[in-house]
Image 1 (tube, rainbow, N blue to C red):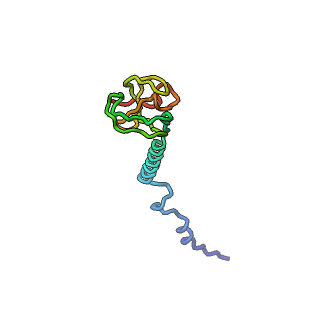
Image 2 (image 1 turned 90 degrees about the horizontal axis):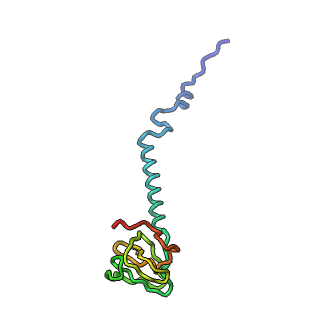
Image 3 (image 1 turned 120 degrees about the horizontal axis):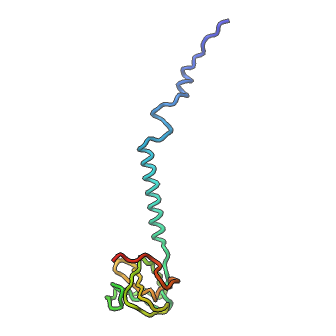
Length: 134
């Protein structure tokens, strides 16, 4: 009895991997994925910054916002009763007494906008944010 060789060409073709359809990503795909992850992490960091801690202004006060860290600096605006502030950075300035003590710390709440830390309940007598650059 003779056996005939089985034709496996069709099967072999279906199981042999096509080098152009590799499941291992090429360098460009890896870089693109890393950039997407980095971008997503950056967005997450920005979201955390946007939801950073805010601190309440002392009850019963409409707090003056000044252009610099001094009560002699020009008035920019006034915060309403019950306001909360996000502190971008802090710097030393005029020594002020308020409901939360006496010190010379001023909180920058926006570019060119400062409030005395003695009117903001930070839970600390010292700095709670980075020092302002200028």
